[in-house]
Image (tube, rainbow, N blue to C red; front, side):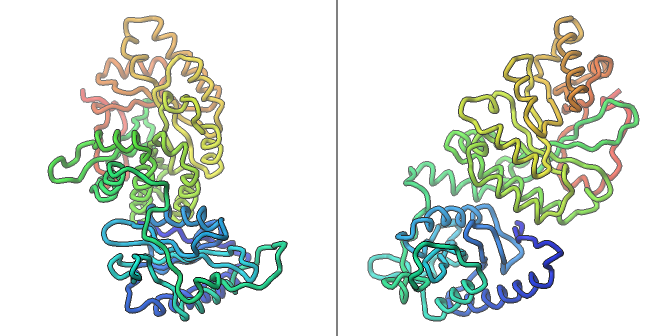
Amino acid sequence: MLSMEKRNPSSVASSALDLRLDFNAIGQKIRSSIEPARAHAISLHDQKGDVLWLSEDSMGPDEHGAVHAAVESFADKTASPVLAHDLGAARSAVCLRVTDSQRNMVGIIMLVVDTKGLRQDASGLVIIMTPKLQEALNDFADTRPSVPSANATSAPLIPPNTASVAKTTTRPMQPAISPHVDRLNDALRRSPIALYVQRLVPLTKGSRLQRYEILLRSKSESAPNVAPTAMLKAAVENGLGSMIDRRVLTELTAWLLKHPNVWQENGIMFSVNLTETALHDEHFIKFVELILAKSGVPKGTIAFEIDVPTAVKPGTNIGEVASQLNDLGCPLILDDFAMRTESFDLLRLPGVRFIKLVPTMTAQMRTDKISQAAISAVVQMSRVLGMHTVAKRTESIADQEWLTALGIDFVQSNSAAPPVTIESLQNSRRPLVGSPFPG
């Protein structure tokens, strides 16, 4: 997992260091104030949920989601100032609202603790606030700029009726969900996964461009190295697809951090598939922004791939998502591109750099002149727009020759380059060139 620590401009490095030292002292005070309960992690956030400080080197997508759910809840001044969120695996994320003297929220503190260590009263409400923890909240509030308010009356950081003992139920911070979705959510968090990569092989002779699609594989003993198709389908159908997208991106950036030689010495690019859920997840782009900032990889290293049928569905937020990803330096890849009006409309999206043709367009190219004309038209259009074209599932040397003649830039197929574990990239810095097909 990765830290999502907020970076500060070099022009304020000195003051940022002083502030970080303050945050570290506050974090240690928080840790000691909840003993004997054990805190696995402590994080300090601003009022928008952005990370200011972390006690550990990591913050996973579940914890990140808990903070942003708390932001929404804490926006209501009458809501409980303490919320607990079940993370599974016997852990809970406890979020505390921090306010200024005018009761405007200026920050959030999150504690990841053992669920069994949470103290409860007779009604099952969690008791977390102590005088020492209240003091730590006051210290954190002192580091935060106050938010202007029409009401200038003084008020404590925690409302009077909860100042000594703040309470909240250990419930999910989402509307009530069915037991089926809850079980699926837990299964998705626990399922062991592995990242594979499949190279887009350039057809230009001598090209060493390295472009890879990230593929998700299961690490379970019953089905190792198999695409978890059923799990992905169930996740998307139940609105949990972005959880998988976050997990894949987290695993990828964590691996890149451990193997900087893979991306520092070559202009490499990895594409991560986006589910439909991510297009509707209002917190997903913020998650991408935070995790990219921590990874330190150059812009253009991580791209996102969306299939055209999903992107053109009514109500999708593809235009705004594409614009935000482009601002973050993430190229966009359109998959299953066909000769239809809705496909061409997507070419106007900012950041589109690759077009993957739908396999039916190339299946009959050697015998069908209409298919040849369609491919040539897309190739010519892509060159004018500064985009690359990719043909999928091409399995022979004859296919390669035709695609090269028609001007296609890359091929992606098991014959050209079968999927391999991402770990294999650290042992092969120089990709093979020449014919991608067995001769």
